[in-house]
Image (cartoon, rainbow, N blue to C red; front, side):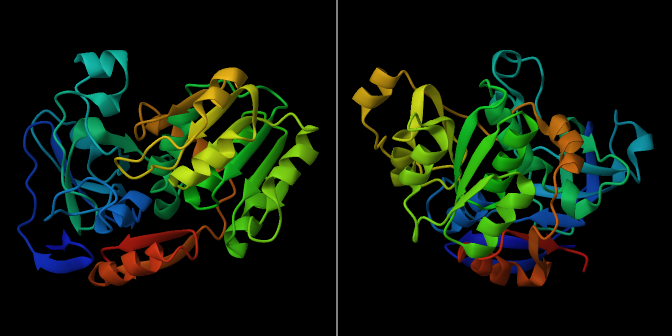
Length: 333
């Protein structure tokens, strides 16, 4: 079978490797769609910790083609989505924090491949009627849900989301579903910004043309938003959002800042305004909830391009330029 191997930097090679074989508690799935995540891009840019060679891609969906010992054979033929890591469900990390903190998990190869070997504990059956491209967005949605499962979204509250990529749009959508009233989306890309409305944004801001702070003051009567979410992963934007959060509000880190980033905020301001800052490690325990939530969101037009496995390098390059919203690798197209 073919895989796209990341060799470091922006180098991707297409390699022939043996088909995976399912061992005990494992299964093999055929990859129909595998989304390109911002962390995949950041790995090629040296902004996210990773060691090549590696097969990237952790937002993949497809049917089960083989199961190993101890795995229910009825799974064969079922379309599944997968979390990034399996979880034992027994260690301190699993029991106290979330599945992403499992102390015994084994990291499997990624989804930029024709077939993938996974642990059955990673697998979630995709509901009937959910197409595979949409289902592959369960992982990023789970990251957003996991983040907001740790804070209280007050009914009728005001919210700000900075960044209109997929994570930002999903954040807007989830805030709307959870009862936020006024939701401001700030994004310089016109296509992404316009898409904010279909996810539930009530106010749109292009920060290159209009002052965001003025809009926040206008919408909130000068108090600031209850929830300020940074969905890009740029420390300077985190600092800017923190200034627009009202007293006893929440500063939420949805985007992943580069490893080693400093906290560029006025700590006196956070202290005085009693602001809570939080983030989340990946999908947490929210993958199943994400699959149930996807049909409630309007994802029309979100997929901006679909590439063959052989064009993975090109797809990563285009995605890194920040145009469009979501790009998919289709290993069998």
